[in-house]
Image (cartoon, rainbow, N blue to C red; front, side, top):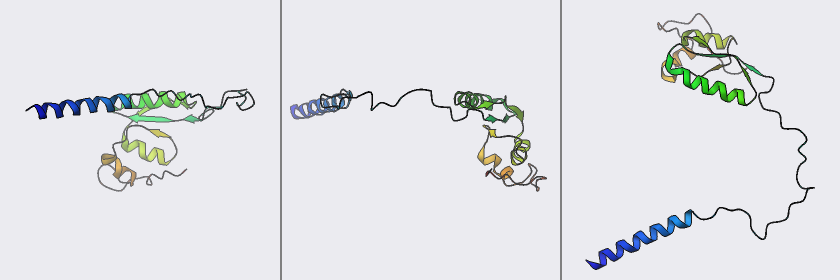
Length: 139
């Protein structure tokens, strides 16, 4: 009986030791680090341009309320990257996919791949051929 308790104590102490070692100091400075000089540091004259600076993105969103949150997040993140994002127009998927194929929209954060794949392939929601060409993503 005492050997089982002893083994359990050893296992628990080893686990705590491993956790303590993993939670060690992550300070990357050391005494052997090379000194930095001003010549080695890049000159910061102007902040770097944002990737979307000067680019306007035309956005649409699904006509069901559950898509509002992810579209809002996408719109905010693109704005932080410098893109000018239009307020998303609320439309149906059957309207969006032909419109994006024509270049009317750039972004749609409301896709449900299993339900919308037929629309990408040029089929209409009723199962017949679409009046517009299939979506091509290369621009």
